Each structure stands twice: as structure tokens, then as C-alpha cells.
Image (cartoon, rainbow, N blue to C red; front, side, top):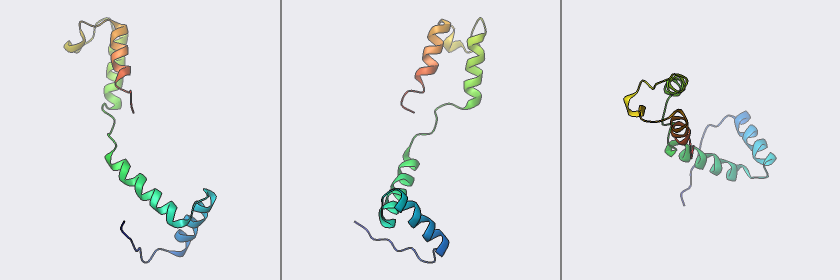
Length: 91
């Protein structure tokens, strides 16, 4: 395993991190390892597959009698709803 040295950390930052670590039952060193691991994992997490605008567009289609997107014209409203909801599995 590697060793990191971080210089010039302001005293108030170090103290706040130490207090937070103690509140969670960890040493400062362990808390910092966990923070670094979470940060690296977050960079590899997939972003949402669809935007809020796309969600709203699809919701509007569900309210309409007929979808505007030709890919979905052969689906019923229930099937469309199930399809859209299925895109959130695993988020």
C-alpha cells in the first residue's frame, strides 16, 4: 500500500476532520482513507442515463393519447410506464 503526505492543511480543517472521524468511531487516518475511497468510487459511478428534461418529455407522452417518439408507438401506456421506470433500476 502507498503512503501519502499532505502538507499545509489548515489547523481548523485538520481539527474538524479529526472531530468528524472521532464521532464516527474512526481515527483521522481511517476517516481520510474512507473519504478517498468514496471519492474514487464516485468518479466511476455511472451518471444518470437520462436527463430531467427527458423524464418530463416521457411523462408528457404518457399523458398524451399517442407517444410522439416512433420507437414507443407500439407500446401501451402501462408498457411505456414500466419501460421508463425500469431505466431507474440499479441507480
